[in-house]
Image 1 (cartoon, one colour):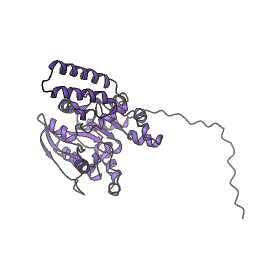
Image 2 (cartoon, one colour):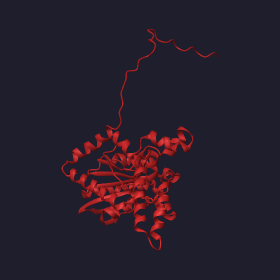
Image 3 (cartoon, rainbow, N blue to C red):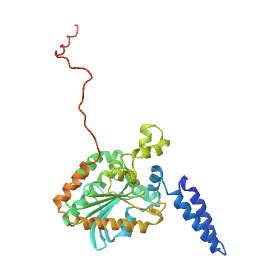
Image 4 (spheres, one colour):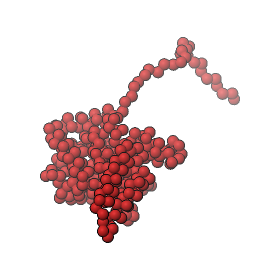
Length: 337
């Protein structure tokens, strides 16, 4: 239980959780005392998680026990067949996916994958994909288009890998190319940010027909730490940056950048992964059901328009503060010899 509560704002919960655990381990447990502690813990959880700040939601999005892409695939689907490689360079372990069955509906599902221990974290490269990862994702989507299968994308990355090797192999081009091609893929595309939705790493697989987020995830052009380092040159300002960036599900819903925020249990998805997986599965199935009645040409037109209308701006005529002279400006004099 202690591992569930790891952040400063969760310290009271960790202490009460330890007391509850000790009470259950006593030689002669007192059912009344245990029940009282359980009620106290439930009440305290409601108080702590009632009004989370953006920075606290970012912390929950990064919790090491939070379900990852392969966890959701295992919980939601059957007959999963993982596909590998981009057919050009290699198999990026930071982005995984393949064919699966979702309540009788065959789908192509893929997403970013992080690791639990040091060995797997390094193998998965912290969930930061290389160019071959984005090329692999595009291969998945083209195969789904050919097989007429809906595509499900689970986004969970701090950002695309910024190393020299990735740049040499065309990281920026791979992301931009994917965004263009995803706008053209002739099959329904469902997107969900399940944890971190960082910068181009998320956008490289982030163009689709229906964009959702889990309640305690974030989606942003830059991490709070990166923003704080640029604006204030101080990573301690990350909480202020998280608030200013409007990166959480409630903010993005208001800005109409996402279509739905999928609720999580108190404390985050890692407290009840099967419950969250069921909610996510129902959202996917509802999207697929709605998509069946839409012709492909209309689907692509809506997808294009959805991203074209993001943001709001106004145009004002530029008025000069001084009147233009009626005489043309004099030619500059020749330099002295």
